[in-house]
Length: 86
Length: 479
Image: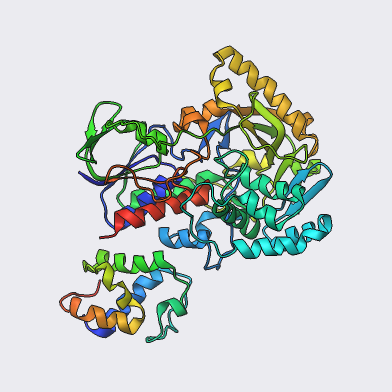
């Protein structure tokens, strides 16, 4: 999956986890935590949805890589090379 | 083999089940009773639907609120705010001799009431709120710091201290007389800062929606399936033995049956020195069905917490019940928009008749008082029946000093006691708020057995749901 599709996949997940949020205006390089009202449980859900939908395992020590959209996409690109978007 | 077996199909068990099933675990919920709900259940009698347990949900925040426990649990369970059909309270009050403090889902009302009746305490109340508003997490200790102590340092009118503690104790107090400040912060927020609400068709709407979601996600529920024992091997649960003798295996077990209740199921029954004993506090609830709407009788309060002296004694009573204080709830007194929310309980479209026809046509008054489990349990069948009749009268007699006298309109009554609670939930001593000592981390002496619900530390409908979600997230979904 290329970067653009990965971004879409993340937006899909976010809209599932936080249906009330305005995701159209999401800034790529700003931390999710600063733009969205997500708490630690919601962040954990991002990781778990990735595992559920795409079977990717993300170790706990890497959770900080998922801080913003751009850092998340960058982190996931190598892991999602051979995966098609759900 | 299951990924997780959950003991108990109450609010916390169902919430945990949804989380686990959503993330593709093979989950089975075992419920000993013939109905779901546990401490927040429902039943049908004489053609009427009744709620057991809490009168309203706490932590009510309006649609669109992003913060707070209600918003959080809706996100975690993937429910839209509208799905719970929550109607806010009309308004409640704390009634002590000579003083009534009104409160509603708008905290400003309570502030202005305090300003009116306790003018010297207004600033102190502000300081108290500032102190507790940032408390998010539950602490580690059970008794330190004491809520009474912390509040007493800020509010120097003892009557106001009692009046603030009264609702919070009645709606969460597992321990006599006091609670720790963490719990106080949570409960103050739940009841005063946020608020109270109720779905039109009651608690059962929430339960049925949760069950439906759980099943849609592939979760399995077995009713009338009590656990006989938890078989332990090498420091872990090896299998769960059911009352009918059959055995189930799972990688993890999550129990919402209560801490002492769960420990007693484990067959490595070693006597733990720090084994917390079962809770001491239980209640009676006297339900009156009226052929009039409470508002027609001049009663528009959603909840009235009453006490007939300046000291609020929140203790296990000597007698069968303590009628000096109580909680009067009228399920009619919520702001229901429409007579019904358009959806029937089993998903079939309504035929134009209100689901809860009885609730619309009739008024309901429910009165809760502290009660002594041992005294009720010692009664033989006939004495028990007579005691309920006698004590219903005494409870209502006491309550009508604080709410309009509705007795001439009563067409039906029901009463449940601590033994009723014990019978239907299995919780020892009918302890609605569980043991005084909580297991905040949800862990047990076994590596794959966890607890959630009332004894994990969070009580009430919202608390239990958050507990089930929290423990499932923490131990059963990671890694």
